[in-house]
Image 1 (tube, one colour):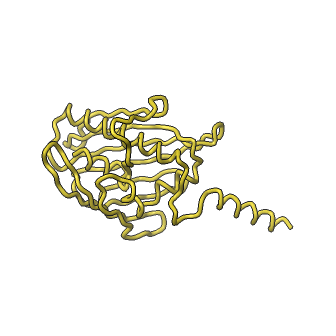
Image 2 (cartoon, one colour; image 1 turned 90 degrees about the vertical axis):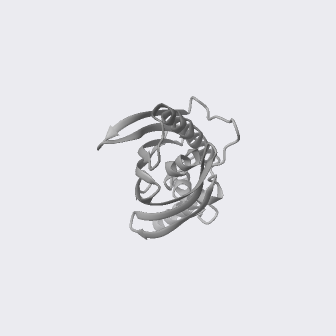
Length: 214
């Protein structure tokens, strides 16, 4: 279950990145809360997490929306591909492997990511190995530092039995590792190789502005 939840958190997302065994994110940068709730007769887990990075907003956005490259750094994610894009809506398919105790199973998900550029990404489950899944990533620029605040909220329910208290603790641990890894990846400030860097974009914008003023 642990790897399944990590794959689901980015939906996409939303994400889990390679993180050294036992390594934890700086507690001053990361806050995580998980609770078990009942909604529409379903017991599910509600998540709130936040953290900050030094990476500027354009770099953060490029990395978080590089869906086709997720398999390069998400553990147990076999493939991740964009099926279609229509305006700000992206349909994404993921195949992965999940392990829970001594069991292993293949995971297949199709999700819809609705993007609000440089602001938020809403993830909704279309089909796959969850009874319910929804999440939202919000990006808040921090002018005083030049960095970005990352906010994650979500509700999820696996389509297999998870004991209540144990499930809450497992999910909290998964999110702490996932968010800690995301913050570490974003702080590297490296955009996907297939996309121009934020610095290049800024330089191009400045050159265009100078040309227009002549």
